[in-house]
Image 1 (cartoon, helix red, strand yellow):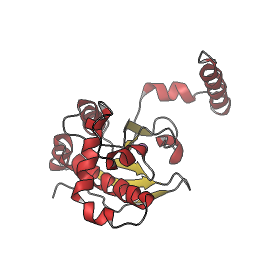
Image 2: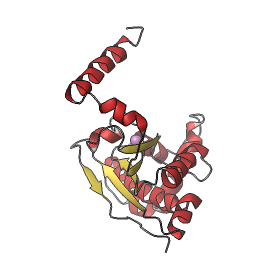
Image 3: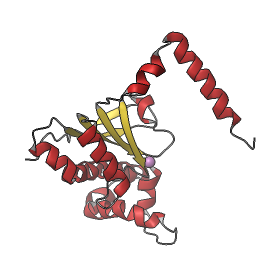
Length: 201
Ligand code: CO
């Protein structure tokens, strides 16, 4: 198929289905958004934010990139965080990684011939180097990747906590928690890494 007709027909069916159940749904949603959550996840097509936590449109503000990385010079991600925290006043920022992440896997490979992506993956490789002894001690490549996936989430939670917008919200007493979770592609389950932070202290 050389066109995107599938998307339009799916969309019409979805829109009709929603309006059949709730005729005012889109009208209501179009006037405001008040999500409680900012989701920072991986671009991986198997980890769709709203779907895996079963929340409808309007409930989750989403930023996704390769391997759910929060870089202090990434204006895209930082702008999303600023808008979510300062304007939408989300109460929770959830960094969600996933086991078997291709970006994390690629970062374990010490290569520099893949173009721009190697610069991005370098952030994850640095996390690996910091935990190299622990990660290398695992027997299988899969276990190594999965442990680095967890460390990567924890590092990104830490990075979110250092973002000026977040620190400023905490200093003003705004209710805001940052969480690290990881998703299992094989069972569809989210695991809490229990690294939540709710203040700047
Ligand atoms: Co991924």
